[in-house]
Image 1 (cartoon, rainbow, N blue to C red):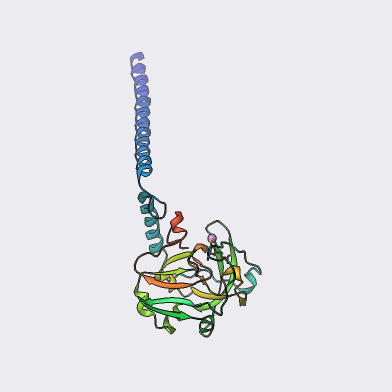
Image 2 (image 1 turned 45 degrees about the horizontal axis):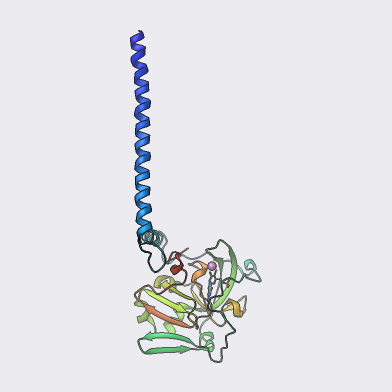
Length: 254
Ligand SMILES: Nc1nc2c(c(=O)[nH]1)N[C@H]1C(S)=C(S)[C@@H](COP(=O)(O)O)O[C@H]1N2
Ligand SMILES: [Mo]
């Protein structure tokens, strides 16, 4: 009887030992993996975006999952005029120095190498006007319902016969002084809520919100809504992107 008890006791002790050993081994494996990953990241040179290739691979994998999970035709939720805030917040002023004069401003569209199209504000206003009211989201964590109008990017492409250019993978946009720039995948550019925008709350854009022309692209976070567009071009390579170079995700889709 007592022998039986003893052996049972030992079994329990053995079990405890066994479990302790397993937990400890798992712990060691985690420590080793963590250390290996740490030194790998530590020694890895950063890419142009200041991000190590291992982390960039993770960001790009996230992008693939996002792209597959969200159909290209999905619409950002639409709101009514009454939902829109009267004085939208101003955020970001790179490439916005001084005031812009539309007497000399043109949007330069790099159609082909050595073939540039110059588009005035009046040219754009002559095209059909589309209004978009949506929840504008900044990566910094704020959002607000805002109201914009302009020409749908896809309408602009059609009227200016730029369909061949849209077979490229990306569009790039740059401020006139080249200080702010974004790159955007073509399906998002051609989305029917994406605007070359010249009005906010039924009035011309204020200078600090992109006068005379900005991008409104509700399927993306605020960073991609470039204010004061100077140049539009097309590319199969990812165009340089201001915030992607600071380590943010390139796609920044919603
Ligand atoms: N030229 C330019 N466009 C820009 C920025 C900027 O710094 N410069 N900031 C971006 C960011 S981070 C946001 S959230 C939105 C803000 O637009 P708003 O000032 O109209 O609110 O503009 C985007 N477009
Ligand atoms: Mo932002």
